[in-house]
Length: 566
Image 1 (cartoon, one colour):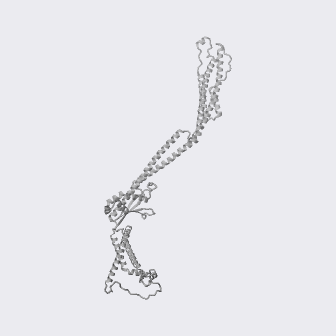
Image 2 (image 1 turned 180 degrees about the vertical axis):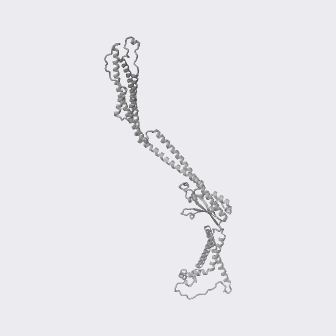
Image 3 (image 1 turned 180 degrees about the horizontal axis):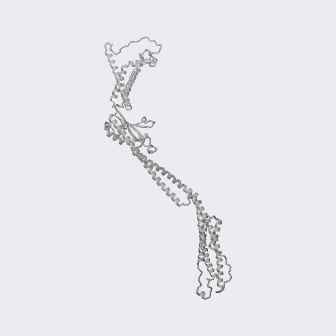
């Protein structure tokens, strides 16, 4: 049958299952060869791959030993963020170089690669992953630190070394953070104290400058003003009493002066030894106690007996009466004067000095006393006038201070507000510093949250890479698919009928040709047949070799990817 016949190409239906089976059966030897080569190459390549071991150390996140209601930690970073930060510090070039030199890692690679490449290789071999199944509650209670390498013993040692580095770095990091927080709060506290001191000094200066006009002194000012009003009224009452007393004393003075003039005139007009004439009526002279009694009566008309002025006037009156009674008693107890010899010789009467002369002396003495009292009253009135001016001045000052109270209240409100805010800020910072100091001390004593090596890394017994069964299965499957594809492609390229089932339904089959051997074995001479058979065999070998080489290239790329992936 010719593959280029239009009749055959037009009647060729879709590939039937029998046709596909026929295709694979016709090229069963090539398919088996390709499958065997690919599978064998995969097995050999996977077997030659170096084994990789992984060891992991389990680190427990140990919670704070002291209840947080007593001491709160100042390190509030999330566990994941803190682990990420510590991991970056552990994976730094300096730390990794020390670990590489300590355990002699990547011995062969260090001879041919740069340090940056070696460090990047180690970073890829280190793994840190969270483990949420230790404590529960959805919060990471532990995490694992792993290392991947070719030597099982070295892998376990490196994993434990990395775990210890993480634990030590966590302690240092927490302590540094706590100390940094404490230092920052201490600095803020010093600045707040300086501000508070300045505001306190400003408030003190303001209070000293405006003492007596402060809002909290309003009740004191009102009381002082009330006392000044009472004092002013009392002073004015005292001035009125002094004025009345002065008038009474002046009247008494006038009477005594008239009496003195009368006595002086009668004494000078009467001859010696003449009998005294009839006594002239003299104006009544008031005693000091009587004047004071009048003043007391006037005070009682205005005040009660418990008033201080009334009590003082009563005491002075009692004292004056006592003095007058004492003077009267001394006068009555004195013996009468004896007449002198000259007086007896002259025939003068043997009596004491004449009554008018004695009365004149007594009147002059009383007149001198009145003068003294009037002078004292005058001084008292002048003093009370000065006191009145002073009281009025103080009243005006206090009234002015009361009037300035609203202004001072507005002025001091801003100073007090800033002072109270600064004071509250200082107290808050002081409490925070005490808490930060306690937290820092807790971190130093390792009583806060810390990492504990719960399960050290053990020496692994079996490798984790490569996954040989998976890679071998993948290679076998790929080889089978590739072999079937090659067989299918070779037969599909011929475009020939594989059987009568590919003909349309109802097509009559006139004859069936038997299998004709074209290998040249049945030819009489056999030379041409053998030449054609060898040529076809070489072509098939070349095609198969190119397919195998292409397959091996693809297979090598796939296996390399799979070894790094799995």
